[in-house]
Image (cartoon, rainbow, N blue to C red; front, side, top):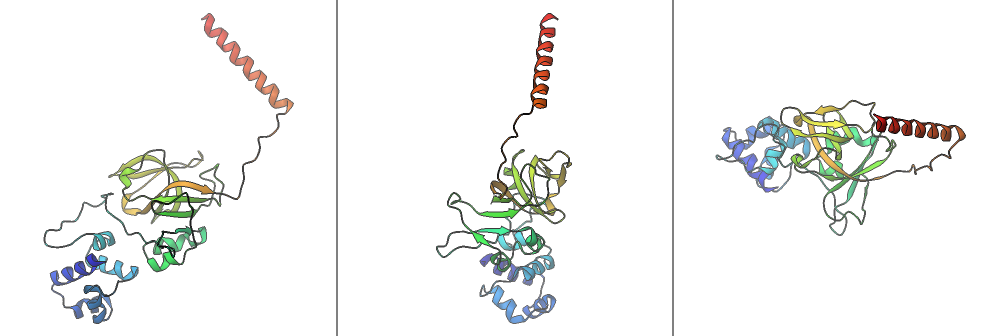
Length: 259
């Protein structure tokens, strides 16, 4: 967290504020400002957001960029920015797979970058996923049929959204839409964002703007308690329809040959 401490100190001095003045503005104790600037403590997510808003920066910039006299902000909407990512690990220092259930989706929108919140989520691991950072999301609704509502999508964190390809299935966490499981319609566009498509054709595709997106996770597997059902036994009616369709197809082929 060294960059945060250096950035807070630099930005505070740049605005000509003493530690006490900055503490008053943030409604915290001066000793806390000193602890943050000396890297003896880490601000929680809500306070981190307050710092970023005060200095007119994104949280990503405050955490990951070295802000000094030579620093220049990246253009708004640049999808290559590194983003805040909170994870948990097990006793062997291996990353867990945290589960975001439907009932926790609203809380996740506010706490996805807060290590304390993420640590409260249910956790598990799967031996087939050893490399990368994964999270599991429970989906609701029928927009992605044939995957049933209640399925759990195990997804890998996408750091650079420009790497996403049309046709991939993803979990998108955004301010306006919440947590949704969709298919990429088109690659990211600076003017429109990312087009999301439902596998269920009754749902219309739509765009999510870059500034609304918090996280994107690439779907890798799913867990469902609904097992596939066997195909129904053919009935006399279905066989008759199949034969009629075959006869029509044969007649059409004959007519094409004659013409």
